[in-house]
Length: 161
Image (tube, rainbow, N blue to C red; front, side):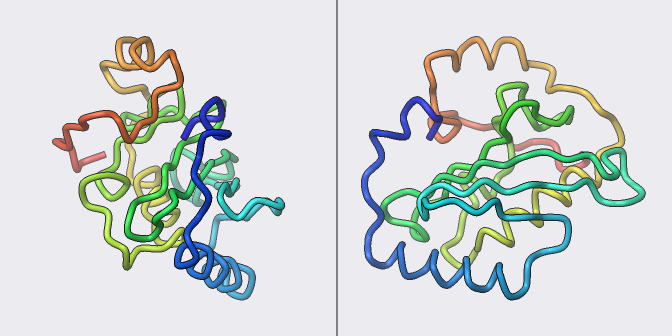
């Protein structure tokens, strides 16, 4: 959910709360390399700092991911976006939306916030160019009213970047 629709979110189910508390505890004990969870009082929205991996185009660059959990997490994927400024990447739009199949069609309840973050860092690390998607301007224009990236019909066609 975008920040404008945050107030309309439904409360987390008991299963979602239990799962997120377990994931947060695991994160505190064994955080994934290259990430810092920014402490807040909300279990439903996490902000995670991403630090670009050494030896990549994004070495030591810092970005922030916003992770919004739906009522029925983990049966439903969280919404994950980059906060401004989003990194220049062929699968990351300037509004922070990320074109990555595991955030949508390929989501599995076995995935965790840590595994999603690691996948995003891997996507960044494997990039050979810093550029926006070819359709960035059109896509962002169509998302102006706070549309969630989960409402997009993504076309996953490029696994080289």
